[in-house]
Amino acid sequence: MRRLLVPLLAMLLSGPSWAGIVWKGDFETGNTSQYSSAQQVSADRLQVVSSPVSQGRYALKATVRQGDDPINSSGNRNELVYQGREKEGSEYYYRWQVMFPADYPSVKTWQVFTQWHHNGCCGSPPVEFFVYGEELRLTLTDSDTPWKTTLQRGVWHDFIFHVKWSPDASVGFVELWHNGQLVLPRYAHATMYPGDGIYLKLGLYRSDTVQPVGVVYHDGFVQATQLQDVLPPAPSPDAGTPDTGTPDAGAPVPDGGVTSTSPHPDGGSDGSPLPEEPTRVGCSSAGGPLWAMALLGLGGLLRRARRRER
Image (cartoon, rainbow, N blue to C red; front, side, top):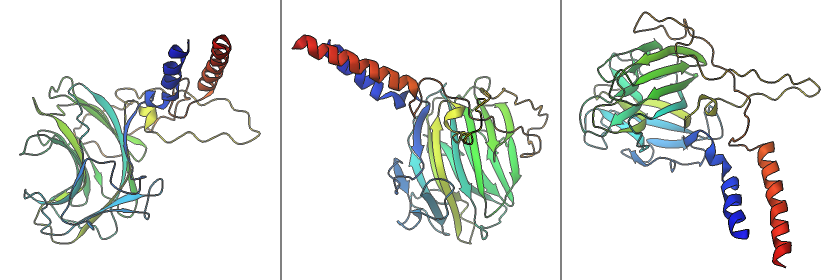
């Protein structure tokens, strides 16, 4: 009995791993240890800072000066790398926040702040979020730009990016929320190159023609298999107010209730709001009554087992 109960108890205590969160790169470690590696010319280019932050206590400050080229490649960059090794056919939600300070350079060329790069050495990555002039843009494998919006400086931009990774345009798709609004309903497109892998790069990578110093702040990166795992917790009801329960918004409707006829939807102009956090039942990262009941029951079984052994 004891040999059976111990592994079962260990499995229950490891319950948070059942939740949909796959990885966090939110800098709450106070450093960049959540990432696989860094491509930077010096330690001051990728700094974990305590201000400004979007959530928690820490954020990343990425700085690029003209000539920064830590990997002897095209453009100038300082970026963190995370080798998530997403597989073809996998599907994830990614959430993170980005802020561009008031003096962020305005130039009519590319300045990439988040990208999912292919394992191959050359060519544009399959997924790029970048600044071009006074616009934020999302560009996919064949230079298709299904979303863009006006760049706002000095505020946090909140992104939720839903993607199915596939080189087949009939299988792969992307979906994007920006600042709580669905700005790109499910958009069928290839998201990988055939026979190639994918990995995340976060920081700043730009044309070597840009002269002014560029600074970008990143915060709160999380990767999950479910939308509700990247949403903020639902607010608790006020004390003394009857709790009628959080409406179960469920997963977003594939077209978000929005009909998009243009490959360049106006960011936020026709989007629907983010669904609320559904009420969590059963397994979750925070546990709950089911965990407590299971542990109490196991406690009783252990006590009875000890009595038999005596």
